[in-house]
Every structure is written in structure tokens, then in C-alpha cells.
Length: 243
Image 1 (tube, rainbow, N blue to C red):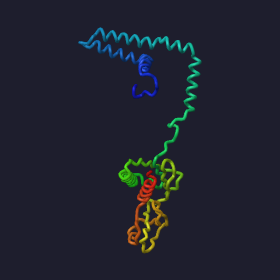
Image 2: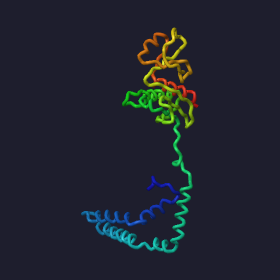
Image 3: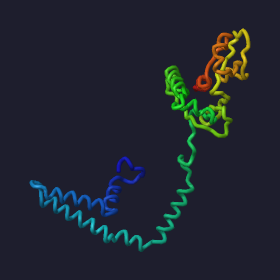
């Protein structure tokens, strides 16, 4: 009763109201007192007497409660109207439960990127996000909130979007079946692939086939997979918006 108290009513009044609002409380008490009264060595007269009183009170409340009956006979229409007005007022009130919760940090992915966050399919993104949160929490001195990840059918299949407190702070497209080759400025010869930008720092990059990784690295490219692309983008976003 104490932990569930959410009103300004006095505790004594709550005890009386809950004890005598129905016959169940007194009935259970009467049964316990009677069992204690018939145990050898106990105070038989005291416990059985209290059991009879509690049982009589339970019987009285269950069959005849003059205060409740009088209140129902005196003002039935008033109580009904009051309850209807109370229900209407309650339906008009706005509560936090009526609002959709806003994620502190959100990651929405297209349907082709679900495999990156699914451990059963070998996805490594969740582990890398946990590592980023741990490193930033150690560096900044406060715990980075959890990243809420969900799929979004409004995005293109290969697109992802990062949000902070519901606001979009970054988005890009990645190809889970390819690797990204980043031009660090020391590339001798251009490799073959889909031209793009490294979303974390805006560097020129290519989406190459996984079989071209060794060749691209020999040409001077830095090659990372799609999960690392998203993770580093998230890391840069969190560092920039850590305030």
C-alpha cells in the first residue's frame, strides 16, 4: 500500500477505507485469527474472540453497508454525473504516456542493412557501437546513452540515418556486400569501383568488391567494411555533438 500510494490522502484514512471497503480483508483476518486460536498453547479466548468479531464485520459489510447504501440512494444522479465528468476530464488531459518517446541516439537502417545489426547473420555493428560508447564514456566522463536501432521502410534499401533527440544529424548509403576503399592522399593508381564519399570525414572513396581488397590496399587505399563505415560515422557525430 505504501509503495503504491500516489495521492495526498492521509495514510490512516487509506487504511480504514481499504480495510472496510469490502469483506475480503476482514474475512482473511478472521480465518487467520481462528487458526491461531485453535493452536495448542495459544490464547484461545482472545484469538477466537477476535476471529468472531472480524467474521461478523465481514458478514456485515458483505450483506449490509448502510453508509454506502445511503450515499447511493441520496445522490445517484450526482455521483453518476461526477464520474462521467471525471472520465471526460481524464480523457482530455495530456500525459507523457500519450507522446511517442524520443530516442537520445537513434540509428535507422534500410532493409538491406538489417544483416549488419543481426548477430545471427554475422553482423558486427552492435559490438562496434558498444566499443564506441565505452571509449567515449571513458574519454568524456559520462555514460553515452544507448543507441536505439530500428529499420525504416521510408529509407532506401542501402541507406541509414543517424538522429540525436529525434533530429537527423547524418545519413549515407552503404553496400554490405562491398568494402569501402578510402583515398588517403597516397594513392598511386585509381582502383575500379563506385565513387562515393567517406561519410565520417568527407574523403573521396570507392565501393569495391571484397575480392579487390588486397589490390586496393597495394594501391594505397585504406579499406574498411560497411559496419566500420557506419560505426566511424556515428563516432564522429557523437564527438561533434557530445555537448
